[in-house]
Length: 226
Length: 226
DNA sequence: TTATAATTTAATTGG
DNA sequence: CCAATTAAATTATT
Image (cartoon, rainbow over all chains, first blue to last red; front, side):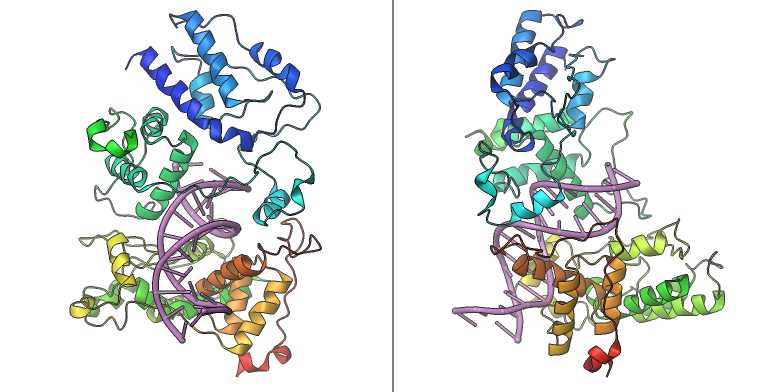
């Protein structure tokens, strides 16, 4: 896979995260300044990438659609891919130092107490947090076709790396962090780990060998492409 | 609480699991060899525990009563407590490498397909597995006193940890996994949908402070002590 | 039918 | 990444 196609995958997957981030990230303090300050963090050039202009534009669109606030909330795999210095695709997104607000690296939506209240029907919780639509994301249900596809992918490789998860995310339309969680839970339930059996038995694929070839033909999962 | 009393609690609780494991674990292939091969997995000594002989004997009894097959099926909390290397109470139960049968680490009773069949009225499932009495455990009923005690404990702390659940299990005679399920269901019913009030409202106890003191005086629950 | 035990699964936390 | 546990939703029993 060349750089451009990989970049395309990553950006596409990042775009699918947009449903997550309005929940995870509080809105920026000053809406008027958010855009300019946000775009200012991009470097002027990205060595190793050919179409600089398109890349810049795509990244701006990426951030705009994601509604990433001053402190970008990317998950670890995302950060790793975007910030990895040795990759030829190193983009280099920098985060501004937190000013006054205690910006926690928020992969998690809320602290413990807020989480408690989140479980209640929310009668008295909406007198603040004006723009937050619904702070409770929980419990997304995947369709039959999505689950079937995930199960098939799990059978092929129960340990997909970030790029593979991006592929799966693109096909299923599920954000990549949800894919990651799904595989974690699936491994916990259906993969006996740690115990002794040295039978082949769905093992973590060796990092040395080529990642397993996934079946991404549309004809096999027409419902996902409806 | 010293090591011996904690060990006593854990072992007692493990013994109360006996009703669960004949369902969770398939019977060993060869009944005549199960005992000897089972006892062989114990180490010769347990550093940090005083009464080695009594401990050995207790563990043998533990395994015997639990009818644990070659691949012990302990739930995760149990494994964590029994295998935790830094605990002074580290017992160190080893599992034999699986020989020919595909032994799964089963917290769940059956695999996915078998699990499906369990939900059905079971018409065709009993032509094999001769000694299994009833593969569907479901629906234990707790006595008035047990329920009352659980409710009181729930009022004191709706989130008991493993050790606390072991205490409750010992007093009530209910296996620890059932205790856990009971608290989960209780929280779902009486904690979350409480549209009523942000008053003290039964919150998860902070991990910093001492775990709440449970009332374990026999005089309060005479019926539980026969 | 209601109450509730049990099951499944996505999500969270901490290491 | 894993282990443990949670809430949410559902299933199923009494």
